[in-house]
Length: 82
Image (tube, rainbow, N blue to C red; front, side, top):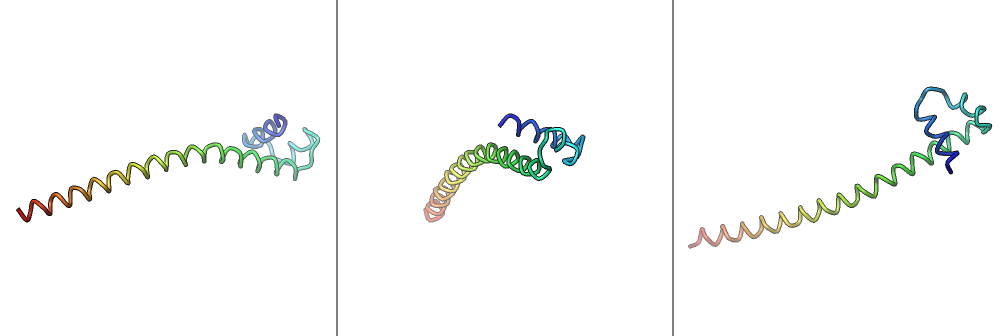
């Protein structure tokens, strides 16, 4: 696993091409590309979970604000009648 991460990080630095990296690590260029995709997929998953928690918190806050707006609208309508 550390090997794949090392190769993927070197690719992301963009100092050399996949064709140059593959022989250095004695792997096929297709494997290097696949490893890069796996690495990027893992990072998206790691950050995606945090975004999900943040979205849940924001949705909860939005729901509370809508309830408060509804309550204020009812109070306003009541006061208009009085």
